Length: 116
Length: 110
Image (cartoon, rainbow over all chains, first blue to last red; front, side):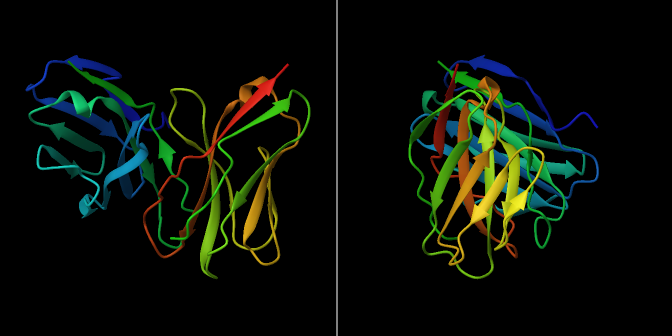
């Protein structure tokens, strides 16, 4: 398996523009997580899905952020409108059987977002 | 989930064992200890986890004290490629989330 695949790897945009980050989890995994990493706040959990259903979005910073998982092999994280403080590396991770399982997360290589 | 405390940074000579401590004094009986690492600009990578017994795999060993209030991750023969931020996390097996703290920045030097 190719692992968790994220795109784009780098995105530079201007304030106010819409940003869409994409993630393809490992086939067969039933959990998908979106994390954000900044120097100031470290790795923050934004939202996670189980079997394509959002379970906990309490980490989503505000209404400008939204995430979807239309099927088991694809998820998006959208920011509209984007602001400079959204600049960060966004990681997607997937896992199989978090509850009662090993709890091992497999991370993608991240999408580095810069909002000017 | 219980809080963990790790030193912000450590150094280790190449070829020597790196011993990374973690304090989790409020850990409860059903919480596992996990270790991940993040090499610069990459996504975090799972290393090992355990409940109460010591664990070993091809990457590292995990030593958990008898009272489970602290643990040590051991990289037996550190290499330059082990330079990374190491995260110690405790998690209840029945929960879905993994919350990362600030970790220990390990610098392996020649």
